[in-house]
Length: 391
Ligand code: PLP
Image (tube, rainbow, N blue to C red; front, side, top):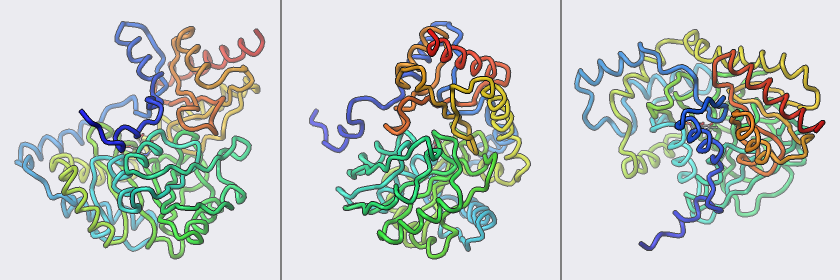
């Protein structure tokens, strides 16, 4: 079959960066006990109360085509949530319900760009950013950031004029670094976006997982609501990764166009999933804190363990479910370290390189197994790194 250039160029080197995950899954399938710290998914399943609401909705008949933009009730609930959390007036007309944040990201990129346009994003980045940008026939324009500044962009990083760019994609709380950008950083990004007349796509899917500092949505800054598309998701906040439900927040006109796109791509989200999401949102903040609590706890465990390993610096984990560790003193790249750790110690972590050149020599550790196993895995990982440094 003749394949389009567009679809063939999604992954440039044939790698999607997830090889370690596939390798560890193959080992687990063969019965090996692997301490699996790769993927960003909770070790708990979706709460039975949410599943009961989903079941009830399906039994009640919400199994036909659902409203493409989202049910009016869910769009209103999401709008009210966003307004309450950010103070920005938001109505259901600013909301499109999507099958997860990923579909929202792709819709946002298509909404903000034309083929050939550049999309600026920070490096390190969530693994699907460059691939989603290329899938939209656009060009990724990474801005490299460094560990010395916890991978936050500095004024110098934001000084270059992004020739050919139409959009800027940012993510705070950040995957993979665990950073929550400071107000100053968010303000600097807002200024950069306005000075260069870009649309800002703000991926906020970890906004319920803040451990230090405060999450500032750039849409709430002066003059930003008109040029910002926010991506939200129930995946991380409500442990609903498999239900595939999230949203896009944008100016009304942009949402109308993204509804056209949804009509021609996803044709909406299952009605019973939307009803379950509505129920889940009604459970309030205490419920969301419960979902996030294990990551908060494991972050504390990690801080305490890493005190004993000064040769393995960690980027201050301020939010989300990941830690970013600097293993450069082992003399190995992140990829070599992750492969050897898996082969020799049966501990699976993601190499920093999967998230961009800026994270070379680092590894991303997902805090997604039970506290005891997590502690053992992190200690094992650090001891292994130390043995390489002294070996
Ligand atoms: N954005 C970031 C930064 C993520 O880490 C993820 C998932 O890991 C997503 C978006 C997409 O999440 P989902 O499609 O499950 O909502």
